[in-house]
Image (cartoon, rainbow, N blue to C red; front, side, top):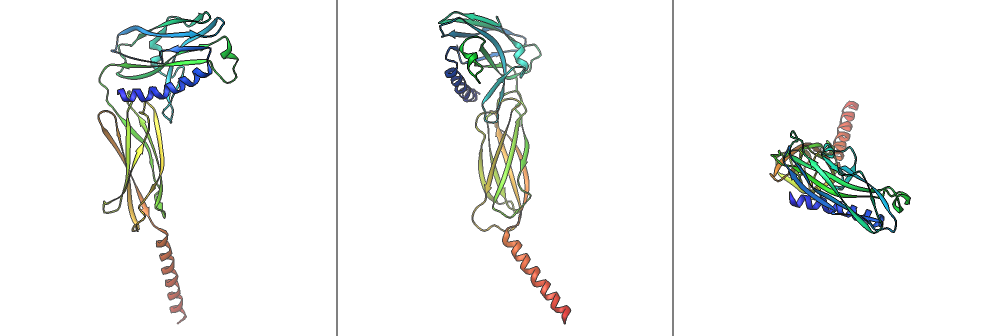
Length: 289
């Protein structure tokens, strides 16, 4: 769990640092928060420090955002994206800060009694509504601190394979494969997998690993596509099986999907064409006799 949080936080910090270089007139700290509460409890230990580094008084809007994980694994923050946004309230929505000064904004966090156990990724944001940031074209003037709010309790890890596709019939030894997975539980999942190709006797022909990158957040999906390159040695025509196995979570669970592939190489079609031509010639000659 801690390694997953560190990896996700690293990419979030990279994004935050990018915006910091753009919004040089102000900064926020800390860049991350991690809080665990049981259902029906609350906390007032969360705070965000906003520093105005400009030479003028600035006004900032304080917001709580939901986080959505992109296909790349990075976090995108937006409003009305998570039910947990309503559990976190800033003490003020607007704050004025004098030049070269800072203010601490406190947040109250209240987890409902009926909240389910799991992880909720949020963003504690400060948005400049005056000053240089709003004048920069294409820049929102918003900085976000990543807030991981965990609701204590028993969590059942689950993941599903949403799509698994390989060609049904092919003449090539390089098979395009497409895989999509979805995290169907309420906590982040470390994920890894492998693809195995077997012949009709069940003998392994090839095996390749799948890298999914960062852990998969709740309700997020990820796709993988690649070419399955079979060995250069001669493979007999016939029915093959492409199996994908995905291992996920701290409990090391597995989900599996299989697809059948008819491998009918080009030389087989050439032989069939030759024999068909010879058969047609033989029939034609018999008819002439």
